[in-house]
Image 1 (cartoon, rainbow, N blue to C red):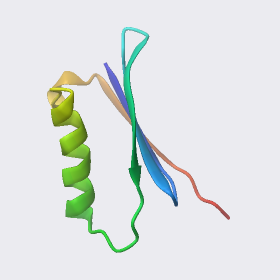
Image 2: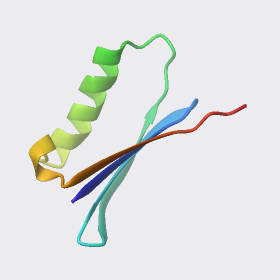
Image 3: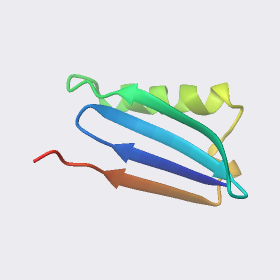
Image 4: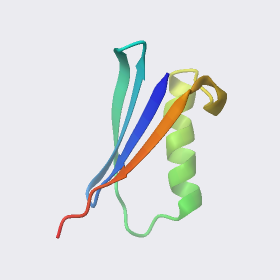
Length: 68
């Protein structure tokens, strides 16, 4: 199973695929006043909604989008 996170200036997109099938794609708003802990809780909440935990993933990909 693959978890991908695309961190942009406006949104954080979280996607999960399992055996080539997309399980979910969710979008979180980027708020410049949020702390790392607040973002961690947001991501954990998405994973909890789909009853997933870190050990379920074979690969985690992090991408950053910079709007210059």
